[in-house]
Image (cartoon, rainbow, N blue to C red; front, side):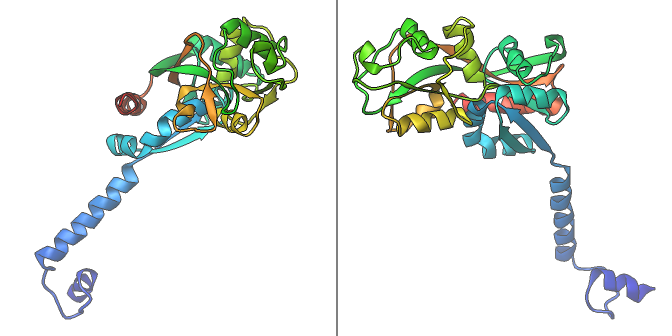
Amino acid sequence: MQEKVALFFLPSPIHKERPPMKMRLLVIGFVALFSTTAIAGEIRLTGSTTVVNLIKPHIAAVEKITGNTLKVIGNATGRGLFELVEGRCDASMASEPLDIAIQSAKLLGKDIDPKTLQFNLIRNDEIVFVVNKSNPVTNLTMAQIKDIHLGKITNWKEVGGKDLPIVVFVDVLSGGTRAMIKSVVLGGAEYTPSVKPQSSVGKEEEMVGVTEGGFAGVGKGFTVGDAKVSVIQTDKFERPLALVTIGKPSATITGLIDALKAETAH
């Protein structure tokens, strides 16, 4: 029996003593590392692609602070809320006030009681409107932006630009930025049927960059470092970026929110 015990610690069957201190420390260190890895959990976030764009550069830092792995999926605010109430994520990401976000989820056939949710602000953001870099138009009023989205203004020459059709890009039907523009700029009116929906806000901006007559409303963070688009000067248009939870967030999600606030404030 003693030989079998010795074999557990050392490869030599004739060594019956306890393994040296160095080996014991290595074994303890390995066990500690394995235990830490096993304890660390995964936090699943789904929803707004604008919030994904905010979080993405800080994932490594936030994971280090919280000790948890982040799985961040951008599939639009409404879809994120839908998955939250279905129990498919730990928190959903929203890029508009809660009442507008709930309306986005309703477009997917999900009625949600706002009393069951808590809106946890990370930071405020700004929606800006972008055109292709070659477009000479630099200023628009909010009234003009409204009319472009409603299809009342269809050519850039109507606002001092080239004789060129305006191509309006928007995000998916349940997208937060799309919902914000509809609620605040359009006063709840429907977009013109000619708008071209894209899979994400980032894709909208990408399309404007390769479309001479392109136009879109996007989160300001998407425009940083993009040399293919220009930001139109107009009234400031702010909105919140947040994580939404079912009721009060758990200690784990609270820690995540605190870490995101600290990191994204830089």
